[in-house]
Image (cartoon, rainbow, N blue to C red; front, top):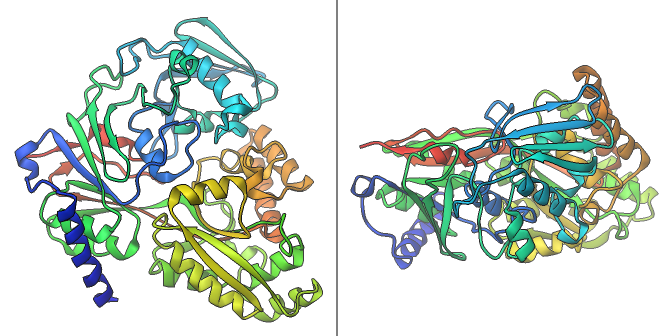
Length: 507
């Protein structure tokens, strides 16, 4: 492994040189944060993007009504206050009167209404549409007030509104059809330049209602080899970096000039089966796959043990001990028995897809799972794809199995309703639903008592693990690295980089 990293490091140094990173110290340009990451955004439409690399960029440019802080609490963003009616069927927001888009125009209730109507329009293909189906109508009594009238009490809707997939965009740009062709938000930074798979240049939004940013701009270099990022940080060409590869991240603390920020995240690594394709249509086949996989071995081998085995729910207050879930202790004999009972004693062949580089553990996870499933006769072909190609196939449900890293949320309904409700807008990805899952999700959505909600979602989690449409593997960490003169970054369980808005470079 040491030799492998040395080869990566050398190639990384070469790559850094090819990309022409300026060899200047952070002191020489203290108002620009030089940043790097390994995966670039796949698009600029905040309502449609699902790739982590896109969301991390867009959350610096666009703003939602509210945000979630490092403690997973709802805090103001565009909205300064909000209130549910006594019956829970109306949610009123007061907007920050200082809120403006980056072209200087005021952000008003009309923009909020237009944004949510766009999200709810099926033609948009919005990633988070299912989170907002309780919205029956939207009133705008004045420029600073928005009232969402709900068809039923909807506890998780505030959490859903904190996501960049619910960002407020200009009504004028919606009308012009230009959302996604350019980035015009109300967030802390403007996107001045985007060279896909090479560089983004951001400048501070002087009209940002959140106040002055800590730096005048951010220049982001896309370096596909994370060893190149570490090499550039050693020579102080890069101030701050988002890292995904545990192999590289665990080397950062060995560098005296660098600091590693490492926090557990809600996102989860998962093997997604496609229950609409034979033989995954058979419950016992899916259960056999679950029983045949050693999740701890996948974690230890692919991610250096950096994380923990998880069930479907990753929110600490609601998660079930994985040992209480179906077949979380590997049982090859039981897996073979289930395969035989399903009529597949001799196994079958299938293809698993993965995205190159996101996560960087995807190929290793696929190889370990390939080896484990071979023991029960499943012949797995691995097909790695460029991220944009993978995302297209994933959204269409065009796979037998898929290695995925899916985002977590602070509320289980917000996290999963798009997959596991009958109205879920990502049912093509899940390809499985039953009455129990849909009912449990709807009950959890309306229940306000924390203890009752936990009970409902415990049953949801146990049922989902038993039905095995997906095989949940593990949660890991969010890694960022920074020079020690960078101050103010706050890592969170959601993986957001939004606190870059207040980062400063110390002299």
